[in-house]
Image 1 (cartoon, one colour):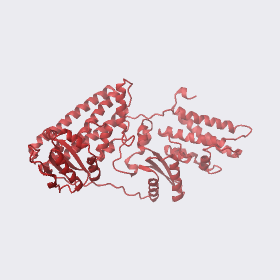
Image 2: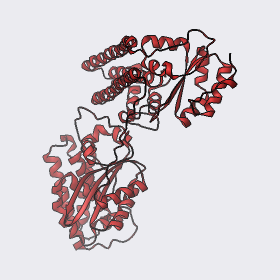
Image 3: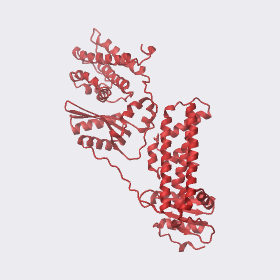
Image 4: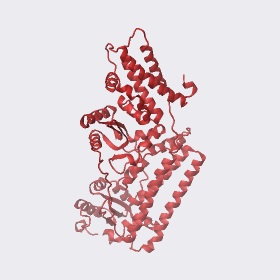
Length: 539
């Protein structure tokens, strides 16, 4: 065998990797080394045909393999000789392309029967078709099992079998993109690993943490329920969402088959010009300033401009942020900063939730979010591979626990009347009670109109959301405008308790009383005439 000092690999253009390969050839029985450079994007491939399966597994776990992948974007695969030849005999398009004769950069001439793949498409075509047909045949069998279980209403089993089908898809994606299947890893890890090869895969799975995914967690819960003989998890609404994710993986596999087929036939990489779609900056200068301010303040994935109102020469922008760490206090600070920077003629209504929070609360709030999270409203996106939401289909909106929101609001109004009608005119604490009523009314009103229960936002933001929920509520704006002092700052001051004497007079209390009467009447009509509560909840 030749000494490693005489070996050179000029095609690699990587001295660090060349030195490692020289050592490998000296220390192990290396049959062949194939190298295919990816010129434009993605990973180049270095495939090492090695005689020992044990050596292949051990070397694949080497730290330098990960280092080369991370720093030089070269994916290294150790495949022992028998497996390599067997996979090619089965028609593996990955082996057929990346182990072609023109890709050989080293061959041990002292060893017999190296893998030689001639550039003859006609002879290989039959193997390729059998390989692809085998995938489609087994995929259809898996899918028919899932569909049968859906028709039988077996909730837990549906998700268990969907998990198997998605695992099957991931196996083929691994095979077609990296040449190796990661059977020892769980589904979360396999999806995460594939992102390096297929950034698009991020679009199909909502994360619930850095390396965990919402749908995969659903599969785990269904499996645990089946093992423990628990009741069904009743997530029938998620069947379509899971189906969409699985079909997306299926399309990726078909696309990769077509891509490899073309590469094998032509024997070279074709350039695929990826057009990065960059949205034009909004023509609205104020909106541009708002977005820039938000991006400097919080970690944002997407921003949706879902509503805009111009009233009396004042423009209000409604923005939904999909973001991490955007607390109510931070949203309030951003809003105040924008008002001071842009001026009083413009206002901003900011909502923010993390992608995972939205996903896990779709069962209740989907009607609200599905109207907002649409391409036509998207104003900013941090990258093109953000996952789509797994919408529940069918989704039947309902007012969960409305009784627990409506009754306290009603009781606060009654308590307010008790103090107002006291002949001694003792209004101690009435300002705080009035603020509590207004906030409770707004949240309940928004919930009834949109099926969305907002956080404890500023009172002005809550009122603006009421107007979004139903513009007709603006008929009470005159009461706010005629209030003896600035209405919303007044409410905000009384969000917290203060140990001091009340300075309210009869005229001021009367104004508050009219607002409470009007709004509680509006809410009562909505709930009672709409028959939104059961008889036993109406007391």
